[in-house]
Image 1 (cartoon, rainbow, N blue to C red):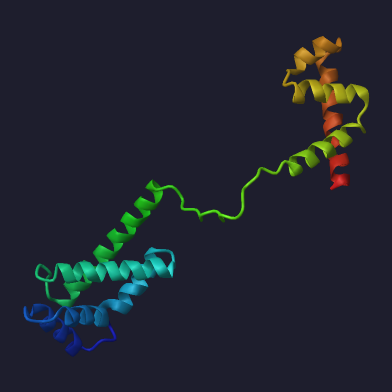
Image 2: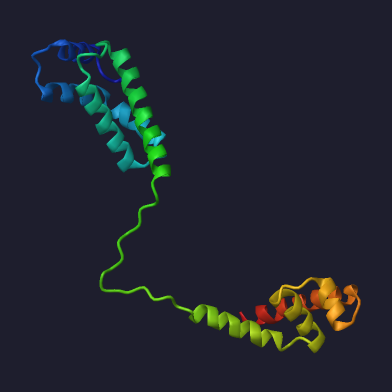
Length: 185
């Protein structure tokens, strides 16, 4: 409100204090004297979300209009009241956004969503092809531990080899798989 003259502030106080003023006069006075700084404040509070900030300013001015009879008429007190109300509106908005599920667009009525397994199938084919570059021992170690979800000790016992051998086979198999998959894109 720094750029507004003292006369404008006095006029606002007069307009707010008159009981015979019209609703439009009050709304106009509030917006004229507080709209721009309140918008800048609301933009900061909303993270520069212009639409949300405009809604905050509008709601703040509506609340001021509704409570005009109770408000302190001095511009400094009005400014403090407006900023406090705007801050509370933003806080309430954030709380309600967290409480509600995220809004999503309605699906197009002419399209039907069908799960597409092609990416998954293609990935499985690439991995299967990459597994073929491994030695039989490495492939068996991968199959037993990663695909059948068995421990190294269980696999070592099944294969009749020490656990260190299974770990070594897994290490070299994973490195070979990474290279093979990287080569396949």
